[in-house]
Length: 413
Image 1 (cartoon, rainbow, N blue to C red):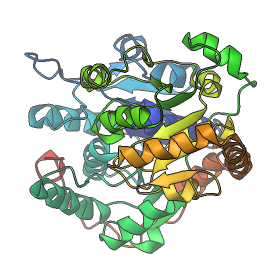
Image 2: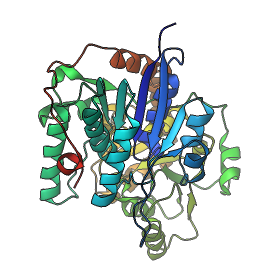
Image 3: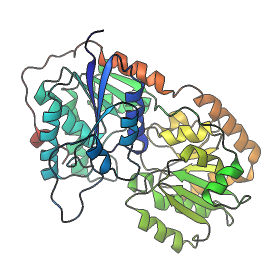
């Protein structure tokens, strides 16, 4: 057997949807052909602290894990693990410079660098170019700009992504709409970008509704509208609360997950008089076992790639209502596998949830069709085959000509 192909999978946060896809893809690769190192960052820079330089290895990388971090699972799966404390999700010029330097060191003997999401995508690809890594791959889980950002930031992000695109051998786009948008904005040439679907873990043993509700401490017979996700601007948690309120006077709400807007979410719950009927349960490791507790899964997001949790909810036969953003309509087909509403309209989201709570025949029909639609399509083995072909494919169409890059001209502002 010849030398294994050395792959560095780089992502800012190894958690939630994008982190799960990155990890499941890495674990699906043949270990006899590929030696994979998973590289992730820190959750945040604590106030008053300077960015921490260096690279944490092995147990040290696992010891500093934030809530929801999947690095221990990567290590348990036989992958090498590294954490760069200065690799942060938010803009941080000093930390970005340290993270770039750490990545340049780490990528010294790598055959493939595969980056995910905006910050790791910028710094990781720039470091790969600096090091002369033979193959640079990037997964777009969505585009890094959205309407909630100021115009100057959206312009800067597009410019950065176009420059990075010229230095990227292959792109993977989670969902067809993400692929089309990347081509439209000049980020990727059509010949170098492929659509993939989010890989989810194999279906767990079925959990019935009563057992799932006992896990969450919910009454057995109340109508429940639930969701799962990070409590941040993207997921529109305040809209979700308003949708729960609009879905009926007896509806309960459950949010599984945590994030920076937890306090604001709690305040909105109190202001809407829902404290007794809304449960904020925080991060949980047993999400698939909790989903059957929901009568309706409601996604209020302002922007998305293609959320893994929607696949999991559909597989659990929970009827779905969601906002029609980005790649979501490729998964939620109106009146076929779920219901769609425009983003920023919690009244309509609540009305759609109320419809499914009242019309259980329609809810059951949509849930059955959704479960059939996702059956087998999102298997990690499928993603593993795509990654194998991507990592071993032909060289980039346009050879590099000695360009050098660094965080000063590529880092996210």
